[in-house]
Length: 561
Image (cartoon, rainbow, N blue to C red):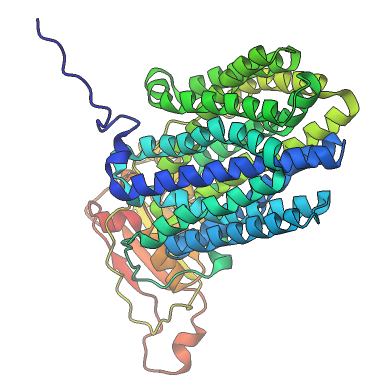
């Protein structure tokens, strides 16, 4: 009996598979070093605040100052990542964080740091990382093939949590021996390797044949896409709730070390390290969890385990027991966040990937930032133990959200469909001409009316998330077989973007709608300029009529109009 072949650690479906790719490997290792510095600074900042004030509110605000920028500027950051070279965006954002960390180091060395100054510079460093996040995460798909993308997402989480495993412990030692100023300086120095690696990366970008959107329009496009994507909306809502409740662990960790365990900076570092070790264990098992459980079952299991771990932290007075509970908490926290992250990454097409990931970052960071403030206030009023027990109770109840916001199956068909040829135009249009009105006529057997109408509700979301507005579907009262779909696009250029943003799954959806069409006559598409004043101002001999086109039912072009 022959033994099965041994599975290579670099097999296509293994967590280590993305490390075979040189660019990803270099950036991953440099980000590991950068994360290490960030965690060392976090220990220094949190402990420095405990030395300057006894207010639990202000101690928890350190976490808020680092996370709040992600919530506030993540959507503009995501739009910038989608509009410009992601490598350049990452370099600029890291430079902002480097300047903030350097300035904080100098002020701390001069003895000029106050609680307010500390929070301000934590906010600056957080702003740089908020701008960096969407550009970095959305560029992962440019560094590895699609089949290894889930593993690459998990590895990025492992990078942060390997740093969390050792960084806080190192930070505790650094703070205990050399003070917070050394922690701030180390963070500044450890940004440099990542800056160098990104500078040397020769990113290959595919230039768009259409001009890039303006920033405000790009933000609106991103918000519109998310608002019309039920699966992404559900994932973001669950992410926000998990961050609000589970953020208690990170926010109150300094107080757990000081008040419950009666330890110092080194104890605080060890506790954070235990949480990080658990997170690494969780990230290494994300693939196995996804194979065994559905998205909803996996998230439910993680939140229930997280509830038990938080309760154990609240009740324990022994460092060993607290550390063991934090290992469990770190593992299930990482698993839940990775499940949310993978869901967004695999559900968003490339043109809006940065903005979708920015929304994910805003949800998790906003939840942690707001939750940290709330847990700090509750701790001031009722104590650390009570605050953590309340967090555990809420986490235990959070799976009930699955009754209304069930985690959706991941849509992996987000590859961009083939670009369509521009439609025939006989009017003198510019990119700003508009609004454009598109009408599509279908002839549907009356027995299929309900099924057709149900499909068109999905088509509505598809059109709207890619740029259309004012969508409607109407049925002719004199000819019940005749249906007319109608929608607007703001300008001609917006229309060209909208029709070429469809993914393969969306094109298949449009084709399903067209498959209902009856008769020898093809589906008819009309494209009309709603305000044609500009088209008649200069050339009176130009025909004053809209560009129209008759498209055969079976063509891909007809499915995307």
